[in-house]
Amino acid sequence: MTYDEIKWPLKCQCLLHGETTVCSMALAKLPLGQRHSAVRMFVSSSAPPGAEHFKGDLMKTRFGRSTAAALALLTLLLLTATPSFADGVLYTNGPINGGANSWSISGSEGYFVSNSFTLDNRSTITSFSAGLWVYTLQESPTGLNWAILSSSRDGFSGSELASGSASLDAGNFSTSPVGFAFDYYRVFSSTVSGMSVNLPAGTYYLELFNASTAFGHDILWDQSSGLSTAFSNIDGAIPSESFTIYGTTSTAATPEPATMLMFGTGILGVAGAVRRRFSL
Image 1 (tube, rainbow, N blue to C red):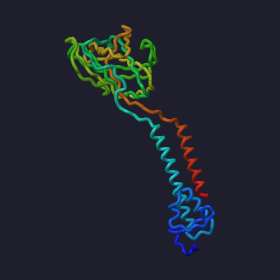
Image 2 (cartoon, rainbow, N blue to C red):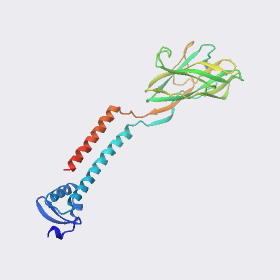
Image 3 (cartoon, one colour):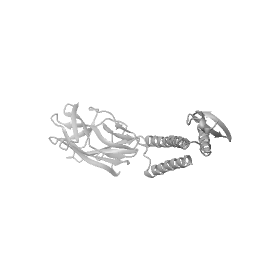
């Protein structure tokens, strides 16, 4: 049987392992490795028109699959290495008590109170809430100053990592009454928003000071006696206060740009080597 008697590519004459074999759909049935060898040997032995085209299609298919696999691997790395962020509570020292005690943070008296908090992962603080007492039932909080300090023995010798002010006028302070204490204090849940403080995992201090009210009366931080360590610049170590810190947490480290560049270069190198091999 000669080439003229065989219809290409439904039937073909293949040289496989040095032997001449008449095949019907042979290439489609051969394992991929043998198919490559058969086509290469066939084309080199004066194949009929169309054989080289068939070989090219086969090589392109194999190169395409290899490239797709490399790209899939790179995509998987990017997905697993890119940080995933979750909005929510970063730390809480308990709810507002409203009946135990409170500690002054009034600006008119120069009081500072700080409470420790711990971040388990690198996080960005976006807001916090705290329980505040104001003297007289007609009063309400109008603002305060805050600072994030590095961990320290007494809460005041650590360096300041971030700070800011919040007020009703600025729109980054909101407050709502939640009850009364000892018949002459009004208790509020107050929230400071608009923050963007990025910190690695560790222990820090939230410090509140220079707080103000509508009519200039005393303002105090509600005591919850939670797990935090607390300090007052007047009284020293005190029971801790009620507060909750909110923000986003990064749960995976982002690869350094140099690492990603090296990996991408490696992928391109592998793809180039595969292409050169299949172009032989």
